[in-house]
Structures are given as structure tokens and as C-alpha cells.
Length: 320
Image 1 (cartoon, rainbow, N blue to C red):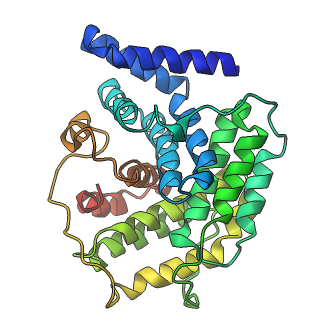
Image 2 (spheres, rainbow, N blue to C red):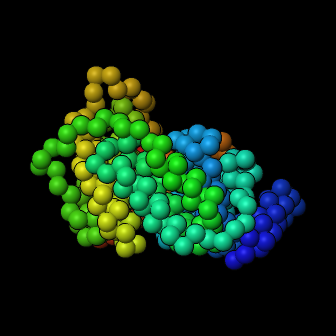
């Protein structure tokens, strides 16, 4: 798809949204779901990831990755039109028209774009950097460049690599010797390991928020996803860092960890449009609301473990 078509799609879709009150609800949903099939959220997300280094690499990187996660979550899990259209609407209401998602200059794709991103990630090999977000965002960028090769322009690739290299060491403890996750290209075994660790972390961090459990999902899933794309070397370059993260989560809450009110119980899940309606229009935060469930559903599909799925689903409301 050419840059001109992408810009035209963006213009048409924005106009359709702004004039949404003039369209019947069904027509509005159809227009927004069409945007998803054209990978508009992926385009907006890679723009945000690439621009985050010149704005706020951490917060804005989250926002970019969340748009790519949302696209993949809806597409891979066949969300119905109502849920999908509501998710697209939330991005239109919050970030789609911001400077963060602005288009980049047109240009020829860089042939080794994904390799450059993978090497930027591997440069930090062995160091746990800010809860593994260097790996999480690298995976999303690689995924975006492969879904939309025309977006892998020089400026975007340079921006993504700068963002990955900006992450700083965080709780970079020595990994416990007994922690040895399965190879990340053994998707079923690795997914089971990650889901079990995340499930245990939900219980362990009651009263301290669920960032540790949520990032177990997103960090671990990013490595499984990279390996599944054939990028086993880059995924395995993060093995020591991931072992460190598992070590940290198994330690449980520390004396200086901030207490956070637990989520109220809910039977709703992110594949239900009512879930997104009840969240309201301005409650996206940094975008974990999209990244956590994307990783969760993806790992469940790879693990193929009904008993583990039942165990996790019973407590998933703590995360979502």
C-alpha cells in the first residue's frame, strides 16, 4: 500500500469518525472495522514507536506498542465488530490525531530494518532494562515492519533503534540458577512457563498492583513472538534479562514497593464490547489495557493447556 493511499485512508477514516453522529451505528462500526483490516492501527503505532525517542521514549513507546497490540488482539482473536469498533474509537478519541502518530516522510524501505532493530535489542544482552520494555517494544516494531514493509523507512528505523537503546537498567539482580525457561522457540512450553509465572505473580502481588504479573505476560510473550517470527537469536539474547525478571517477581513485594488498590471483580473480558464501554473514553493510561490482554490471549493460544487456562481465567479480572 502506497503512502498516498495510507494518508487518504487516514483522512477518510478521521472524517468518518468526526462525522460519526451522522452515521447509523452499524455503518460506523463497519467503517472502523475496515480501518483495522487496512492495518491503520499498526501504521499509527509504528509512527508512535519511532517518534517516542524524541518525545518520551517510555510513556510514548507504550502508546505506540498498545496500538499494534490492539490490532493484533482484535485480528488474531476474531473480536466481533462491536468490540473492534469500540477499540478503534478509543484510539481516535485519545492518540490518533496527536503529534505522536503524525506521518513520517515517504521514502524507500530499509532492507535490513528488522535486523537493525534486533541488533539494537541484542546490544543490551543480559541486562534487565526497565521491566523488559526494550524487548517488548522491539518485538512490536519488528512485527509492524513485517506487516507494513513500506513503513520501514530510514527515519522510522532510526527512531525505533534510538528508543530501544534509551532504556535503562532496572532491578538488574543476579538471576536465580534454578530459573531456566524453555527455549523461546518451543512456543508451547515457553508459553506455559510464562503463564504460570504470571498467574503466581497475581497472587503474590495482591495489594501492590498487577504490573509485575502483566509485564511477565508482555515481556515473556515478546520473546516467544520474536522466536515464532524466526528471530530466535534476538529472543534468546534476552534470556538472561528474562531470568532476572522472573527472579525479581518470585521475590514478591519489597519494602519500598508502592501499594496499589486491587481491581474490583468483573466477569467482563476484553473480547466483550461492554468491557470497553465501561472503561470510558479517557481511561487508556499508558496502553497496558491493550498490551496485557494481547499477550495473554496469544500465550493461551500457544500453550494449549485447558487446565492452566481455567486457573488463569478465574483470576484474570485482577489484570484487566
